[in-house]
Image (cartoon, rainbow, N blue to C red):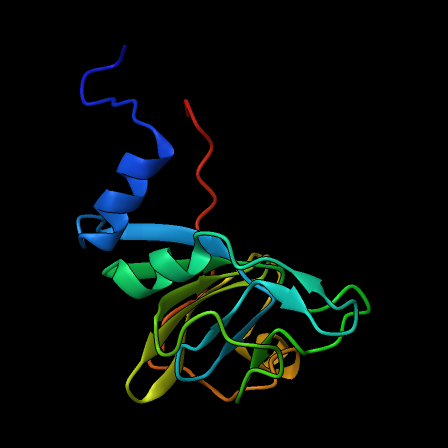
Length: 150
């Protein structure tokens, strides 16, 4: 076992989550709003979904990082929106959004584009984002690709 590693059952993990002992979580999402609302459990068009532990993590974790595709399968800007269209998992909980083309911070002033993937620029990312993005930094936005072991 690696030092610091722990094994525990589901009941104990939820006790840690609900007790506020988790500093950060990474969740998938269907939609995120510009104020950090999260929708990640149901596709209304299919009438299916199960909220699972996502609500507990979103409501009781200090930092909620969403990992998601930036657009729909049809390349439509319907994932990062002014307001979520799907049922919410939690309100105002998302702190960061990491997509295949950008890293975005959720702030009290709205969404801030922090980085763009190689080959992308802020204008291209904004064109595929329904919510308004702010660009606070003037220097290059390019993500640095880190390869393990190099």
